[in-house]
Image (tube, rainbow, N blue to C red; front, side):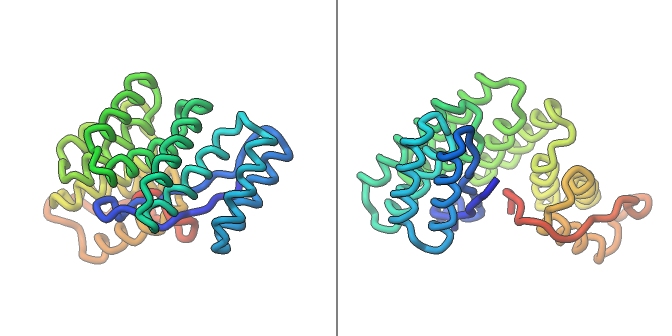
Length: 242
């Protein structure tokens, strides 16, 4: 699956990284969607938009095409301060969710868009509704936690992450996020434990590797009871969480 990572577009959510997905069922639509991602990566947003629109015609049920179109309009609307572009982005995000009600990247990008428009209440409602509709989807709680953390509510973020881990105990992003919050609150040993568990389930997290290595280099905190037994791997793509 081809992916495209876009730069953050909101100051209060500056850590956000989202990717354009290039998956789908229709071969022609999938190919066009992949071409659009490549064009966007090369800085040709207009050509990418045209190609994504062709992909939509070829494969109108592909949620990734709608998401990708939403990202193009979102980036353009922010850059140009164009309300109509942002409105179009929101429309495409909703079309994506109509096709895939559990499209994580789309929920994240739409939440960012809502916050950027001073509609944070709508962003929280969006994610809460997702969590209620999909009680067995850990990603919904992880995205809720991310939003709470961005608004400096670590207690609520931790609660959501623990809920996510109840649903999916091996969820690497949830473990990494929980470790980051615990580290910020001085729970160093527990943070190291969370980071190590996260890497055990997904070794391609260089940011988590770096955080764990930095903590290990400082030595174990008082009462830790020994060194961690699991060692992180190296390499891999940038994780969703910072």
